[in-house]
Image (cartoon, rainbow, N blue to C red):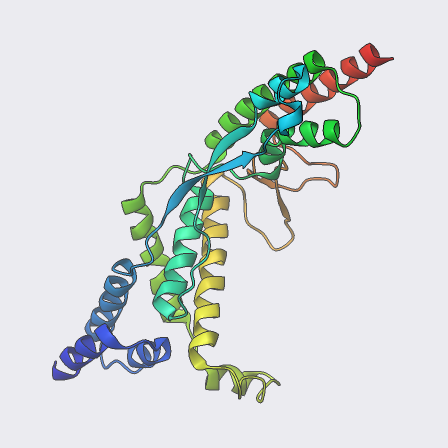
Length: 288
């Protein structure tokens, strides 16, 4: 019991993950392991590296000499498009901040329905800026047609935003913390020491110059990604198997089983993509 108390006091100030792993592996009983793991989780959730979201802007400034022209006035109405992002990196280097950053990122990416960062969505939001720079580079642009194209892109972006929101998994932050703790407990139970790893591989000298914490932090983060991948497959009702391959929809990011080499979009996004192709075809016909 005294050993547990001493460890809990030391755990508050220690910055070395390998010490916690060693204590867990050398624990004399399951109850002692439970104490160690509970203290680890307490430190992780108390980390100052909280999940942070913020608003970002796709913006541009219309040149002063062009602001009174018809195209300049039109582009001026679309010179700032806002979307929501999140802090994906940390300047801190301690294990607690780095693992917490990984945990934060997984939630923002897969569960936060306000954060949509698929490339297709951002490409649509950047349409006004892209058309503006094409115009000032010397490409002739009809203001009416440009505004029509911009409004069509914003409409597509809104549709894609809705689809991407629906594609994200449903889980509150508190429930996500509980889920993450089940992942972390498996990681603790399956984690092997560097010495054990070296004894089973031919890379005995590979880790001589690598800090032990770096090895374990990388293992924790990679394992969290793996467990989340399995959770996503179960959530979407996709069967797991060694011979199965998976892809994400190019528009909304929904996970799908790859049944052939031509599959690019989920059923919902395929409809949006077909509408977009039809619109492009009609635009080319009008411009002929």
